[in-house]
Image (spheres, one colour):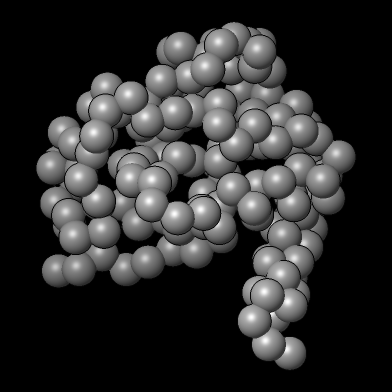
Length: 145
């Protein structure tokens, strides 16, 4: 298996595993919202995974519900949690109120410190008016020390 077919097979496997986990979790969700990338330079795998997970769970995915509103430098080389929080302050906003009162699965492909996921959850709650916010990340990295 090569190229795009291999990537699709890996994506399908990740989505299938995530869907099984969410079903076992036993939560009721109305929508899936991927955590936005701090810098958009290429297609983001998290968006494709969120769409696939939505399809597998029969709930809509809202890949652009949280949007970047300020230019933030890439966080991959920022290891201090406090600095990450400062960089993410007022970095995101929601698009509309279509998820107000809804139960949302906030989804990310990578969890490092939790700063981006926490900032996204705060925006979903404060601006989006989401009633419940669950979080799921498929990969966790170790922090550099």
